Image (tube, rainbow, N blue to C red; front, side, top):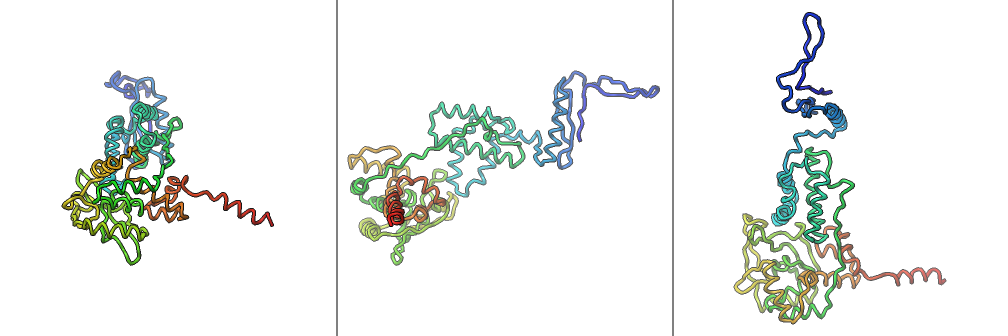
Amino acid sequence: MGHVQDRWWKEEIDPATQKVTRIKTSSYGKGLRYKARYLDPQGNEKSKSFPDRQKKRADDFLLEVESDKREGKYVSPSAGRRKFKEQAENWIKSQSSDAASREAIQSRLDSHINPHFGNLPVGKIKPATVRDWLGLLDAERLSENYKTVLFTTVSSVLDSAVEDRLIIENPCKAKTIKRPTSISPDIAVWPEERVLELEGSIEPRFAIVCPLGAGCGLRQGEILALSPDDVDEERMLLIVQRQLRVVGRRLVFAPPKGGKRRTVPLASGVLRAIREHEKLFPSAEVTLPWKTPEGVPTTARLLATGPNGRVYTGDLFHKVVWLGAFREAGLIYRNRADGMHALRHFYASTLLSRGVSVKELAEYLGHSDPGFTLRTYTHLVPSSHERAREAINAVFTS
């Protein structure tokens, strides 16, 4: 058990009378009066000081320390001095091996988190601090989904501070904190006519992106990195093993999202479109570093390239080619509903309407969790009400 030292007074014993008297020390009236001294779980001496008239606080502090030591919850008072920004830099290293993903997380920290929390010691971040920050996000009119991502990031950094024994508990988990809730709006699936209209209006050398998106469910980066060498005609499969990413403002090849390659059933119509595209616009060899700008140079023949094998970033492709197709077709572009992901949604809708299971669809789309696929496309799953009625009627009619 520790003890509380009074820095302003000390006790002396009179040699003649053996009486104990209290006398002022040289520190009397200077600085904090009480110093709570104790040993941490490793046996190192620690202390915390308190001002005059607060000896009870010092005594209570020592009781809390001893209780936390017994329960294994002890946190050094000095540990919480580490700044949030420093803790976030340490936390981010464990989040993903993908450089582009880490860049995205760092961007969120720099734009909306560190300006509020960055220079604060983690031990000084209280529930009130988090509530103030959430109020600022509301004032900026950010979307609920983005606020959810930002809140999850802050909470995860503070969780790591708890695990590192810098703080006792995560203030984001206080009862008074109302966590933002993400909203999953129903996806508006394109009709087949719109897919065909875009395919007919897009620049011919890029028309192949429509059957690859709507007929195979590939993401934009996967389409732009697809090679004819990824086509297995014998088994009628498409092997999705790379995508285009931008890391540090440089194009790189990277594994598909989630870091796992997958195979997708290849329809004969899509295979025919790939063959015809190859005749008109032969694939071009492209060499890019793997995963990071310093990565191993990797070469692949790409189907969707510009003149002279020019490779487009996803952003440039969207602005120049994709939006250009809408202008050519005379269609009004609707934000969120009309991005290239619309082709992927069309693919998912088509498969579900033909009875393909959610589990199979998740594998084809590259979703690690079929539950995510179900939550995203649940409104597209055909109703089985009539089949249920027929099954029960077969029993009770007899």
